[in-house]
Length: 292
Image: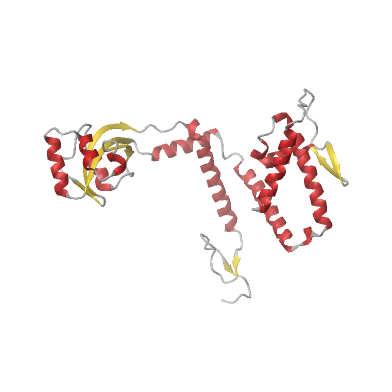
């Protein structure tokens, strides 16, 4: 928590100071990534370093005007270089904790690089469209709009049905009698729903009705006894691909990740001290020489 707070403070301080920087936008060609922008204790900070840091910082630099972001990031890299040199001077880079953290970050960077390579060609427009069509095919095709009155006993429900048959108003009876406070305040309205969203006895009865029809007999569920009125029946309109493209892309990347790991495990040796498999992994074997 302290580390995250210090990082946020550093970025915030630089953002504040950069607010007074001058806009240096020009029409000059983009500089080479190897161009040196600053040298700190003999170590160069290049255009490429700034570009990478800016990407890594992501949203943290969005508060800074576009033309001033590189200047802010360069200032941050100078600060990092100074503190890094100070930490090395105190031997902090030789501690076990630092070495573990460094190794973790190395593995993380290599994993990201490998996954970037693996997903190249996976997220194409054709792949997005195909996966979208597959997901749409799984969606319910029909939805209904219904209202209900929920009571505790079958006799109460039958009495309400009789009142409705005699011309009583469904919404008024729902407000007066329903034990479902959420819908009772809305005249019993449950809004739109598809199959799978309600308990099965209720769902079966609701989808069997025609618009305007009320159940002739009370419907029992674990919540009590229902009198159901179907208001409307309509087709489900799936969201357009443009609206869910980000979610579909995540599915494609997730599947690519799962496939990549599965293939790597086929030729890998995964060992645990006691031979017990890791969660979700049956391939682990005991480390040689370990006790069982």
